[in-house]
Amino acid sequence: MRPLKLTISGFGPYAGTQELDFSQLGTSGLYLITGDTGAGKTTIFDAITYALFGEASGDSRDASMLRSKYASPDTPTYVELAFDYGGKNYTVKRNPEYSRAKARGTGSTKQAAAAELIYPDGHPITKLKEVNAAIRDIIGLTREQFSQISMISQGDFRKLLQAGTEERQKIFRDIFGTKFYDLLQSSLKDKALEVGRQ
Image (cartoon, rainbow, N blue to C red; front, side):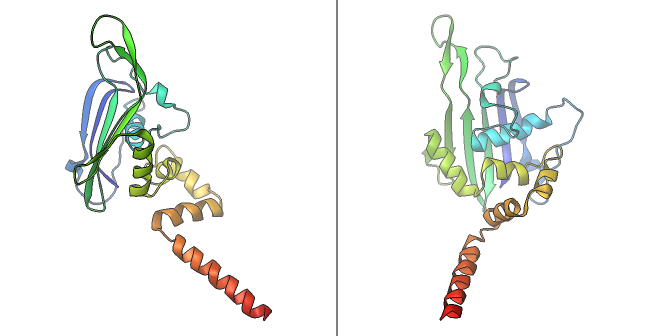
């Protein structure tokens, strides 16, 4: 998965709308997001992870905490991520549940959490559960695996290195799609034991 463009609105410390055009960084290698403490690096990780999975990149931040406390009541809170996977471009947009100004009259109302995934052929999916399942099918990773592998932030790579053998095997099996070989190995082992008993 290669991010192409990230739009953040009323999200984290960003009161307004910010756009990050990752396509300017080229198509090969890794992206390094660096800066001073408090510069907003983790918010970029949170925004990408939230767009894909509906959760922040870290376990200590809940989706309800993502609305910017600096945003004006009429500023929408959402993240939109255009990304490339397998040479195809997808766009996913999500917003958490939050209070916003009423469209008519005074006061505020609750904006429901929503998600939309637009496939390369242009057809959209708009139900939260369907978007979540589709993203999982496209990328082939859970949020936890994505955070450990693709969004390695502030020492999280150490968690992958220190993970137990079984956990590491599962992560790499999912990434490289080697479950078939695991099943084949298990089947051959069972057959060898059966032949040995005969």
